[in-house]
Length: 293
Image 1 (tube, rainbow, N blue to C red):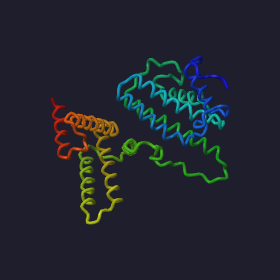
Image 2 (cartoon, rainbow, N blue to C red):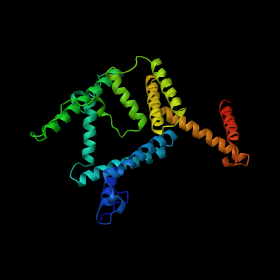
Image 3 (spheres, helix red, strand yellow):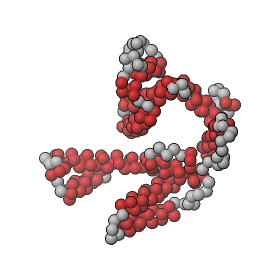
Image 4 (tube, rainbow, N blue to C red):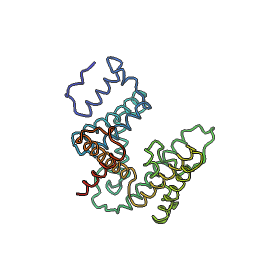
């Protein structure tokens, strides 16, 4: 087998060659050989979040390394597809290049890769244009699939539900916000923020009722908490705040404060397990007070 371990190839070409070697029946890696598209998905999600974490950390070397890990996932999927005679990495790059040109007519005049320097379009118009082109692409793909279907088979009515286009594998907060945005575009939305806030309060009250019930119904509690979370995501959307980003920042803030509490406890020669809840809350208050100085 050809030695591709040394840096004697350009970056992408070397990466593709290494992928060939890892999947090769001749001396390849058993773990890499066993992977399928389905088995890789959880690693892809993990790598994507590690990119987000690296960006939040601000270390440029970490960002580069994590982007490399995510790129390897894409190369892996493309290689598996290539083995099955479906597409390869170049096909992936070509497809996204064509899509970007197609979806940016304000930049690339008449679908060409030369830049249209005269084009100036507002952000709202760009968003509408993007969505219109996406819808057209989807309709064309659907028409092509139907054309390839055996004419003897019954066809579905060509009316796909609006929310079917939202990927169900998205993280829950992002999925909820995407659903709400889709519905808002067809007018199914509150006109302002106040009724959304009322809905949040209504859902919280329903949680209280379930918690105060004589017999706790865990399924009902889960449902009401889910409804409250969905309402909170909607409130964030109405305030032009990304719910996932807001929760991430709140989680980072909590982690930072809790670590500071732990450090204060250690400075007093205690571990957290030695302290009562009241003592830990006292340290928590000190940490919050220090933040305001």
